[in-house]
Amino acid sequence: MRPQDIVILLKIAAIGHQDWIINDLAHDLGISQSEVSESLNRSMIAGLLAADKRKLMKNALLEFLQYGLRYVFPQKPGAIQRGLATAHSAPPLNESINSEELYIWPWANGEHRGQAIKPLHPSVPKACLKDKKLYELLALTETLRVGKVREQKLALAELKKKLLNGNKIF
Image 1 (cartoon, rainbow, N blue to C red):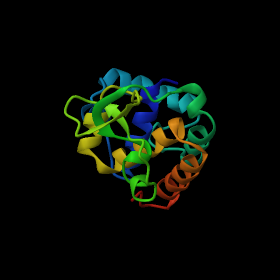
Image 2 (cartoon, helix red, strand yellow; image 1 turned 90 degrees about the vertical axis):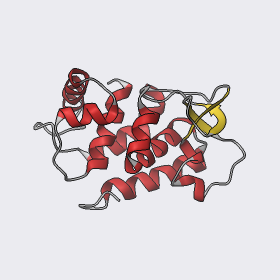
Image 3 (cartoon, helix red, strand yellow; image 1 turned 90 degrees about the horizontal axis):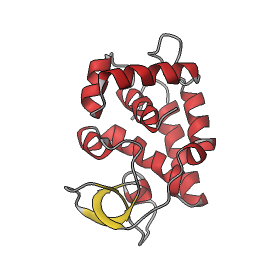
Image 4 (spheres, rainbow, N blue to C red; image 1 turned 180 degrees about the horizontal axis):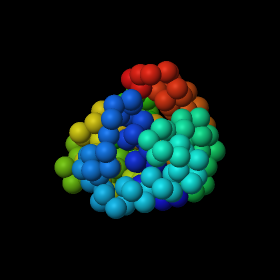
């Protein structure tokens, strides 16, 4: 697995039951078509996508995010920078968690200043501005990487709601 595999899987989750092609994923995420294709293969082998490489194995993805993400792709908040809010500083958790610590993905055009968290892929801030659903899923995922226990529990509960609620993701 590579970090961008998580971004691609969450984009597929954000799309829901709409049809998609590799070219669309690549364009929306700012990741090359060949890398998206390789990522889909890795995710299928890992059991996070069905053999047809179209159906997301939601329970397996949630299990990986809950138990493996922070060990496979660890991250510690860094220096204060300008960027796009993430983790508990972004929707939907920023409404229920009031914290003076602001976490951001570094991005020159960002509106917030906070501790920098390296995103799973450099294109994440730009991709999130185009897709609110993806933004929420990635922000929740970042909370699992860098949040405290309470924040992680809230993020996991939100992820379960968003990923397992039947035919609608949001």
